[in-house]
Length: 316
Image 1 (cartoon, rainbow, N blue to C red):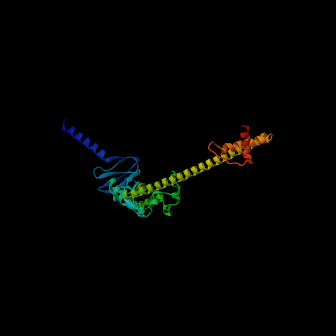
Image 2: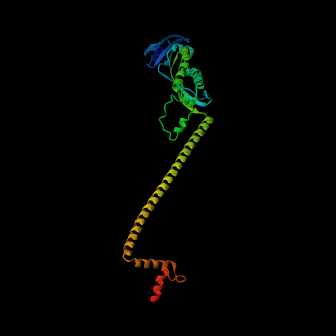
Image 3: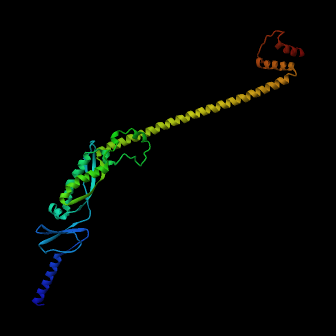
């Protein structure tokens, strides 16, 4: 291979390298800032093939779509002095890449520090300015879940459990407060939300203790209601038993009375035909009840009771 061929190959390779370093493409989700010695020359957001001066110019590509920011959970006190762990997230995008380059720099990862410096204080400010109930609930709407036994407890809840601001409004205020401070960096803060709220360990133990006390109160309430219901059932049982016994005794006495009356009538009717025989039988009953083998009786001779004994003795 001669020197001319080598030179031609070198020239071709150099041209290819220059063309590659000159051309760049822009995607639909990207926007480009072209700089020359760290000075902004132009900005392009049109997708397609673009060109720049090789070596002296650089194409810095920034995303146009939404970016995620996830804050570090932190311990924050509420207005009512309750310490909670708050975890937030946000969505943002670059709306002015030139301003972003001048204030933040060519690396998009640096924007995370700016977001931390602005969003975290806004979250802390709004949480400390509102009560715990406003940070966890949006309204005073009744909960969908039904907790058996807590109806009376809920009626006695103090007015401090009433929501006056609400979590959704706090999110909006955090967004409004942080959004205005990020405009100077060419950043638009689209949304901020509180992802998770949790009690710190000390407060969590206190909450668990209160929950246990409430459940014990519910259990005691059920236990006392059950005992009262059991006493009522036992009382009703005793009342029914006495009523049934009384009714049965009354019916038995009525039947017995009717039987005695019928027997008396039959006796009267039978003995009415022979009164002397009736007197004799009744006297024998008296003998059987009053006299036995060990009895000694002293009677007058003209008594009615002796009359039959005398007749029996005479017959013998």
